[in-house]
Amino acid sequence: MTYAVRTPPPVRYLTRKRVNALVIQLAFLAAVVWIFYFLFANTTANLARQGIASGFGFLGNRAGFDVSLSYIPFSNNSSYLRGFWVAVINTLVLSALGIVLATILGFGLGLARVSRNWLVARIATVYVETFRNIPLLLQLFFWYFAILRPLPGPRDSVSFGDLAFLNNRGLVVPQPILSEGGTIVVIALIVGVVGAVVMAVRARRVRQATGLGRVVWHWWLIGLIGLPALAILVTGTELSFVVPELRGFNFAGGIVLLPEMLAALLGLGFYISAAIGEIVRAGIQGVPKGQYEAAAALGHSRLEMMRLVVLPQAMRIIIPPLSTQYLSLAKNTSLAAAIAFPEVISIVAGTTLTQTGQAVETITLAMAFYVTVSLTIAAIMNFLNYRVLRNG
Image (cartoon, rainbow, N blue to C red; front, side, top):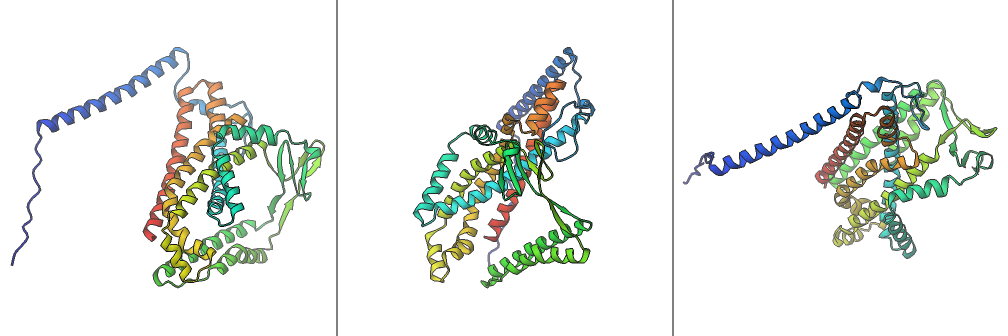
């Protein structure tokens, strides 16, 4: 009988080569620290000579400017700090809506690109090759200056069933209002959606373990309609809509989507969706042909084949480059400053910097915001990629 003898790991001595490498690394680190210190000290001295105090104390001062779009109360008497939060919220809302629009359009384009219908595939190809080859800034100018700004005034608005109106001041849509008890209805809707997601995940695990599928559409019906309807009956909540009305030279009531918001959303959504469409097409075509043949042999329709076999495998290819496009969309919201959309670059690195002269602080705030958003999106997409790879 033989026994395996475990030899201890070799002792690593500090040789001349390792000492030289360590010295070089320490010298490089010291040089980097000195460069940053030199830049900081030089900038601080320059600001002091110009009579500009360094620090973020200016954020508590009166802003003295107005913004065209704010989801929180803001006036020219508000502070610069509140203006910063207005810019952050505007940018996050634009990023979220842009990601949703680009994802829906992109996946539709990707499926259309591999469609057997010649016309559908060619239309998708023209869309992709057109929008992804035109610079994003030019597309923003096109939507804003060529499409939205030339629209007629409020009195001659384009009407959609006398409910929504489109004019050169934006898109005005009805505003939903819940009476007392509306909070409970919203909570019921959230609980229903979460419950439907949980049941869908359980059904997927059962299908992966046993090969037997479970129907989950009724859980979505219960979550989206059943629970909110029950909450409405119990609480007596009423849902009403405030329809916009033309009064004088503008509309009263409703929700207004400004032309700057619409142009930025359409420009970002259409531009990024073209790239996502190509990513989805590549992911679908990256699935081995044998998987299609196996699904067809089992009697699956083309829709079932795509939903149950192809797309789950294609997601392993799609998600990594999809993360890059989401990051690109979030950072490219800064270009919306060119069409006067009040986002971080426009308010923080534009108006605030001009009025206060605090260049270092305002640029630092803007950079910190974009870094935080990018790292958050990357973390979410990495987690999603991990789940897809583990389940795959």
